[in-house]
Length: 340
Image 1 (cartoon, rainbow, N blue to C red):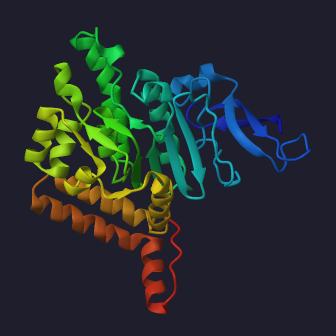
Image 2 (image 1 turned 90 degrees about the horizontal axis):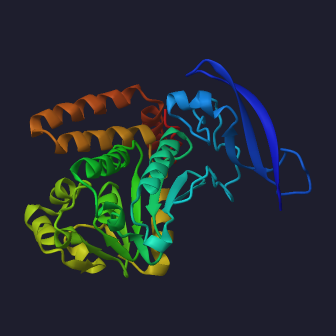
Image 3 (image 1 turned 90 degrees about the vertical axis):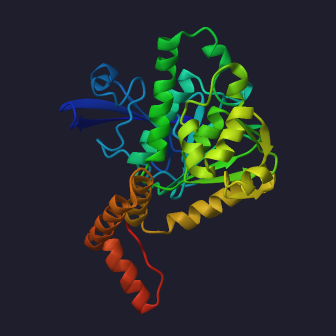
């Protein structure tokens, strides 16, 4: 099995310039041409121009602007090798997956991982074929939190520069207009728990361990933990976890509402994919509107929240999915939602 390259030219609407794209394929047959082969990635050969609009550096992520999407990539191998070193991005049918990939550091958060996570989430957000996102790590660690070796000698301005991009990508995941699932195994500490908190659902393997050890380092959880955790488990339990720095197991995490399910380590990914498949069958626009209504309501008074609810509910009656869903109910058939 080898690779082949194919050159195409497209007009980038953002910079109104012609850009040359090199499409790299993985050969799946004896044909040494881009027919019946699998695209691996797209490389912009004029990165200096494209860097003007922050869409690419060496790898040009022009899927939306140049209609380069995953639609024709076989579901058996939807991996985009966009020079990612610390995350792996894949898609199987309508389910996208971001796997944290710093096993030597227990998937601790450093600048490179955060940057690549930003880029991966942007790709998932722009890809209309992806309806659900799973974020996971490996058996030993989901994410061990911040990289202490990176932070130890920082001053206040340096640590703000470090934490700000983490907040940005965590907020991006939180507000992603698609359901998100954290599939958690092994060590999940500090920023790792905070990453899991950005997801709509959290599934934990029975070997998962959770904790906020920051207090023992003379700091506190500041990648969203001090705000998101109390909203999820209540202020008293959140204070207990963050003030003491204690570690809890998966069953305790379930009992306080930190995770939705606990399954065996061997069943974790299958369970996450089953949930993702179920969610991907739901109407995408309704899911988006519902998620926005819930999030907005949590940050305002109930009357304002109810107003937002009515507005978004009414907007759904301008969608094809609403007509399809109600027609399918009346006709006693399974609806076919298109996300329109």
